[in-house]
Length: 330
Image 1 (cartoon, rainbow, N blue to C red):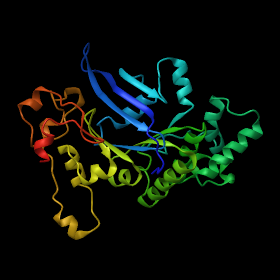
Image 2: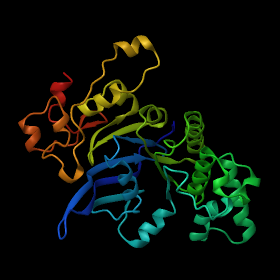
Image 3: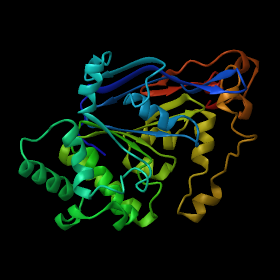
Image 4: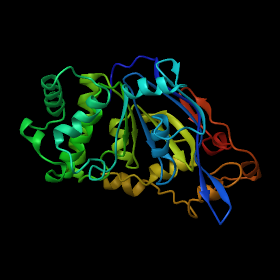
């Protein structure tokens, strides 16, 4: 987690939307709102954690932000400039990269480690000769704790943790300012997870990186994030400093999520009341009217069925989308 952040946003996302057309019959299709009007900013040197249940749209936010999917609507700003043209996006891709969730499927089995890490250098022509390319690859391998003799080997010869290090070295190749980390430790053993998380911390300090860290493990997110955003069914429902979200979640969904986090102290764990949610997550194809969480919320009223609550600042730096936030937390 970065200590010296300044307050200039590196990334700003305004009302981002990503809809997919899904075929529902022979000649009919329906719009699946994977991301529906999400807004946030990430300051230079900061880590924003993005959490929520599977299928809530976390990964789609990361991919749409990087324009791996063309946004259906909304704006993405990088360093004070809106990304509009193909040239803007190409330039942005030199400064923004992604570490993928699965280190088994995200690496090409037919390429050596040196070629996997060197591929972004080839795409963006970031070297003058073969020697310079080789030196840069070895430097990147050193950053993530791989030995130079690993360079000529293939990805299948490595463990999951080492493969993820290769993926991280590849993401660092273009010397980025911003990295989207899409559940980068969820496929790894717990003992390896800690090593990789600490490496993300060290790289952020050494290279001045900014992260969007997507995960569903709330303990991992707490460890690495400066601020945390909570998503539900394509919408952002809460955003605040990591300590605020953990100590005082204000949205009923965040309260339920955090009540499920395991606590290592048995006395505190016994006193901690689990908030169980009723019902299943609705399908994004048939999302409820008004507030998307209302079908599982104990506080839902008629107003929640009619109106989508505004995502607004209820305390300094603490944003919540809930009509009943004052009553629930009074």
